[in-house]
Length: 193
Ligand code: GAR
Image (tube, rainbow, N blue to C red; front, side, top):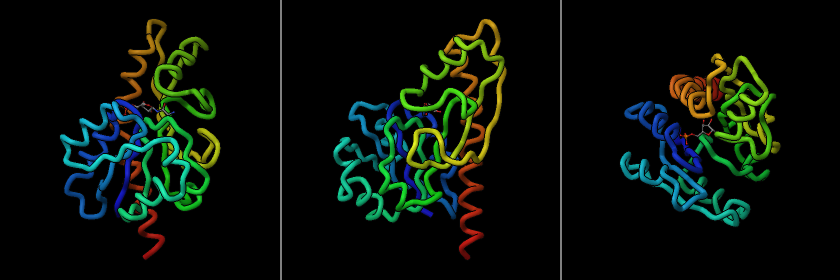
């Protein structure tokens, strides 16, 4: 099962997922893709020896662009890990229930356009929430509204900042995201054999 990971920035989840599946006979992290030519994920891809494709917004929206690259690489599952653009309908349609995203809060709260990374953590703190967490979900055509697969929680303390909360969330993400991806892929394999 070839998977591709989309990331727009740092890419620590992308690296963590690639390390988790290293040597796995069923899951091959074949490709990283990013929409930012200065994203740190590009350095991580080099270190991991995984090809990283940088694409423009136009190439994402063009059916001869990113979709073609995915098809040429025989990508079967797409993982979004800190990817900040909306995936176009025709890519969602080409990968039904095979695109998975992670969101750094407990959806349906604190989701939607513009809600990513620090913006999410600041909103959680401003709302005086006592807990936050992660949501792993399928991707559909609306930001953060696909079917939820998994959630995990952490406490938000009075003295938490966006940075300290982001750290707690990253710990949950590193622990849970690869395992959830693995079980979704296994489920898919079981249903199609
Ligand atoms: C992660 O916390 C991820 O949940 C979040 O961006 C961060 C990327 O970190 N994604 C979103 O906010 C999507 N709406 P990373 O680049 O170090 O993996």
